[in-house]
Image (cartoon, rainbow, N blue to C red):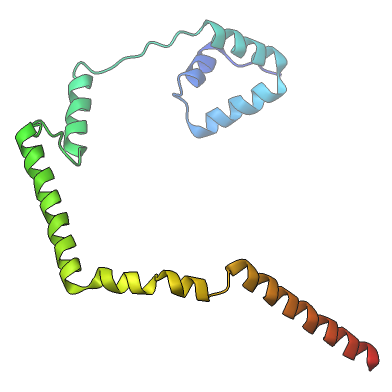
Length: 149
């Protein structure tokens, strides 16, 4: 079996081979323990020298600025503007309350939720219990009628 040359192994590590040559080396590394050991030794001693373009930071920053959807708001609202906005909100709330009072909406709501009407209605738990009891009685009647047939 022919072993992989050191120069081809280095070219493999630098990813400078064709796909066909890469597959050949990978297949050989799967089968040959000697070449695989040599490859692992090369990997452990291999130092990668990262290289960036001189203007990498500038290019990156330019791309970020171009893709930024909403620019950062540089002006802060003054305290006076915040107070004005708060007063406008309070004024709108007070005006809406007055309109609802004059139109009688609050009066109608009070009649819907009148205390006497709540007293006349049975409680929710009693309704649930009575409906459950009615359902159980119906099931019992159906079971008796099926048993009689």
